[in-house]
Image 1 (cartoon, rainbow, N blue to C red):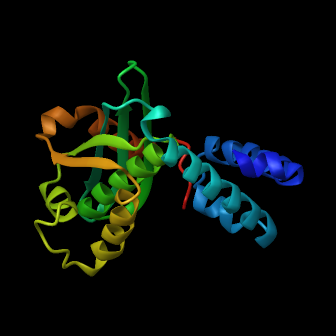
Image 2 (image 1 turned 135 degrees about the vertical axis):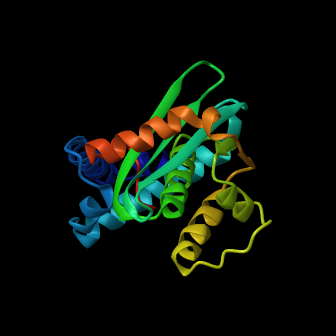
Image 3 (image 1 turned 180 degrees about the vertical axis):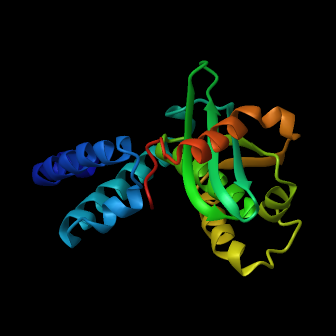
Length: 206
């Protein structure tokens, strides 16, 4: 992380922000609200560091995380629209597993599906993954992300643009459909988010 080495003050401030953010998330609060409470100078410092970190990790590509990374993501909405959440699970060739889930309040199933995809993509980027296969049980989202369906819903257009921008940061990314029964872990996590009304993962709003 060259930026941290060049600026000790930045490193100290970022370290403090990280500790506060981790505590904030452990308490079940969203990172977006946390960043809204930062001073402009602290947010600027942190985002400058994050940009450097992401660039360094993505440039490392599969040196940071080996090829063969697989991720599953899902969204759940009880009522459509109704109480909603998302979940994702990431599996590395080494056998390591990482996961996360988030509560969304009241929204549609398609929004929840996109939120799960976006959270998984952010997680992979933050971990320095350059090549991955990502699976969803939403044919709509998969076909839209692969350019087979147009995105007509105004509610989904912004989410699609965000996901597409994140997708462009990978050297190679496969987004494919799987039957619901093959996406059980992500589904479990999405429903856990709805049941607990909690968010549990280190997800940054960038």
